[in-house]
Image (cartoon, rainbow, N blue to C red; front, side, top):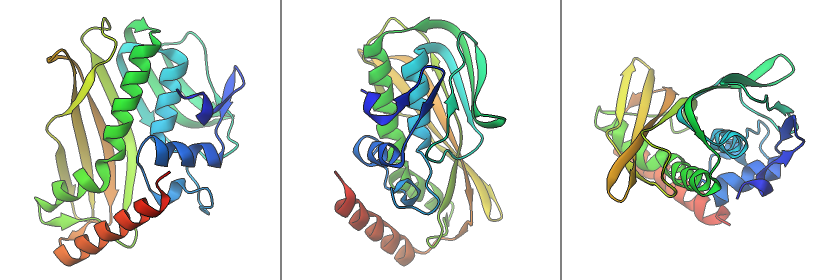
Length: 232
């Protein structure tokens, strides 16, 4: 599933602008301009980095990912072997810290299902989830520069004896003080109607301002037009 989106050199992987941009638009339904091939400040989607780790290491019962820096094209991302906790780095610069606990599954069907379902959920966070979640408290992001930073995510599996768990949104949380805030997107994983796992995605928000419906309408209209023009 993921082989076309990164280059595997054994001890490290690399992701090109084209690979990162194509993953964002074709798989994650994510049209953040930072993921455009021609972006001046290009950034590999965090969900692609997460997906590569699952593709390389499989699924553990507990997994936690902390994002430290944005990944540009050509970065040689190290892939340490046999460690429960490790940093994915290029030289001394850390891009992602990974913590794994519990049993491990190398089932590709499970891995691909989890990647697909989570990435689709995560990619639709903006604007479909984030905007109305903030609106409940009378605030919104800065439409001129919508700064939402992927901080961390975690997954807890009650059992690995499943192959195609479905993802269901759970209760999301937004808190803020002044112009800065935090969003926690929660989800459950289900198999045959029973909850078999759960997870969270944490994001930091800056430039928070008072809610304006006209501005939000224009923001969403612009996003949808961009999506229609760029969707593969």
